[in-house]
Length: 212
Image 1 (tube, rainbow, N blue to C red):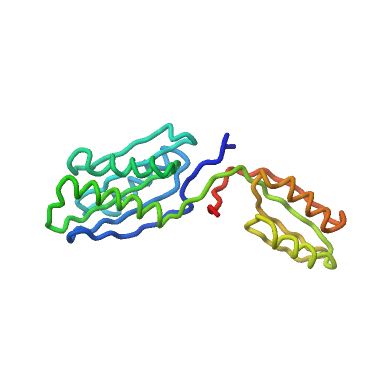
Image 2 (cartoon, one colour; image 1 turned 135 degrees about the vertical axis):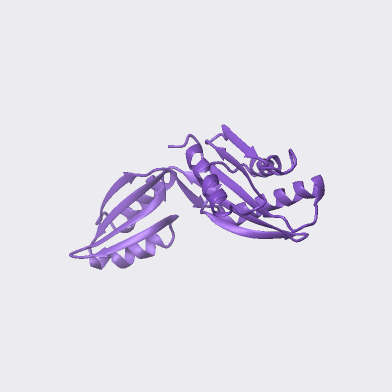
């Protein structure tokens, strides 16, 4: 489990930026390990092998202990480093950004390239979405049908996600909650149902939650 919450990407995504006829494909992916980041870079380079450049930057670890970047043939310091600076400034880790450039015939100059790759990295991060990683739990709840309405009313006020229901002799629900909220949630749940509920708790891997 993480020692403290940290920011990461929510999903893999791609967006496009066009500057002076050069097309920049801005890819991002959450990666928990350096191996995952390297694999993502390989995949992008293979898929876009006809591109002029596939530059990248990634940060791994709760404290961004691993940081790597590459200009991939662009003038030194104009691509990978500006991308890395965006990631560092926004304090997003366990992520990898790859920017694929198709040269449009117009030179951008060093300053133009820095601005293009910085903007492309920001666009990739925005498109993937940012979230904060928290230790989380999966809570299973078993209630009778007469108490289902009270349970659903209670859940509408709670910071839960991924709610699933199963109907049988009783109603079984499962949901995910931040570990830091679980004790207050369980206490409120028991109180709202007058103790007429059975529940079980399972610790999960750290999960990224959408920032409110």
